[in-house]
Amino acid sequence: MKTLALIFFFLCLIGTPEVLSAAIRIAPGQSIQEAVDGASAGDTLIISEGTYKQFGIIIRKPLILIGENYPVIDADFKGNILIVATSNLTVQGLKLINTGRSNMDDSAAIKFFDSKDCIIRDNILENTYFGLHFSNSSQMTIINNKITASAIREFEVGNGIHLWKCKNSFIGNNEVSGHRDGIYLEFVTHTQAKGNVVENNMRYGLHFMFSHDNSYIRNTFRKNGAGVAVMYTKNVLMKENRFEENWGSSAYGILLKDISDSEIIGNVFLKNTIGIYMEGSSRIEFTNNTFRENGWALKLMASCDQNTFKANNFTQNTFDISTNGSLVLNTLTENYWDKYEGYDLDRDKVGDIGYRPVNLYSVIVEKIPAAVILWRSFMVTLLDRMEKIIPTLTPDEMIDESPKMRPYDFG
Image (cartoon, rainbow, N blue to C red; front, side, top):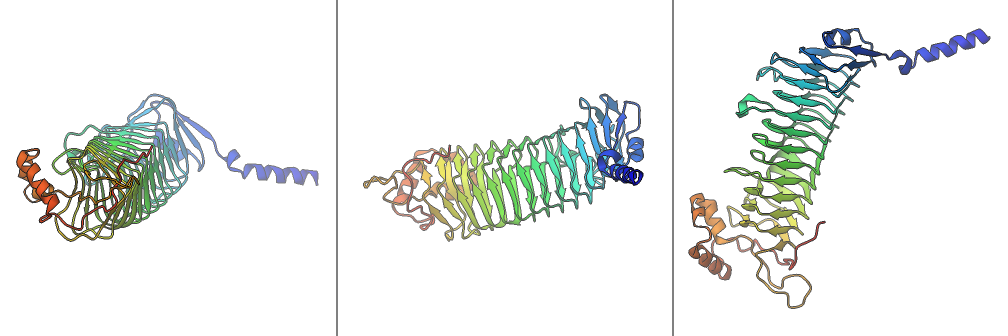
């Protein structure tokens, strides 16, 4: 009986993952692919410091890959570095450089297919076509990676973090620069991007289409070609992000095209050509946002309806709001406008007369962009004063009936 008990206890032990898993050390000169092929599911591969000239490493089993002092895996411009189709994979502490440059193959530092519950953390990716590329995957955790590229032209590089047809993932505290789009999401749901710094990308800092029920919190999008683009999407939360210094003839902090039922709360739009450009968008709540030192704080096209702008600060913008039509189907209320010249006789901190943020000159510039050269001329000032007294060209119903006398302190 005692022997049987010992045998049973031993069988239980060898059936546990802790005993089955092993640590396999890989040194420079050894094949990472051979180590992967020889490993059992759940094993840990420790890649020693050094340089590995390898590419096209295929992983189809749950493993843990950990680099010591950021070993360099150099694809020498020949293709993908890691190709993954598995669940429960961890990749940590690697430096992945010099992928191929194929548009047909979408070469990437790490490319995931049909994967689940994988963690990609604390890696350095340099000079890659795509950085991290995910297809048809779920529950991915992408954190604390530094992803940079140095291409000169847009067609020479892909996206930093690219998700297609993915769900239930987290993208946090990554640094992404020098790519076509910093973060690109298409057909992605229930995913959160938080605390990322995305700057100096050629097209968009964040670009997502047909991607519902996602949230973007406390990210910084700075000096990208055209800021952030949100298209054909619903149920988006964008909260406490910073959109800074996105300058150019068609640059903006956010482009909202055909999105609905979303919230944009507590964001800062600073020194952009256009803070927000909206077209065909409905039922969006804009609350506690700061628009400062933009060319246009907001371009609100006539195709937008049922949007509410409440308790936002508009300061030091060249134009607060511009539009291309006279029909007004949106609500402005309780915002602070630094250009407001009204009074507060009852001292309730709310202006006693309404404020019309669309001035005549912004309407003229919308129709004749070259007219911007006359900005700050005496004639323009005179026309704007006359328009405020007798509105003729500006939409009469675009008015904040309760403008605040002091800016909000959002902390």
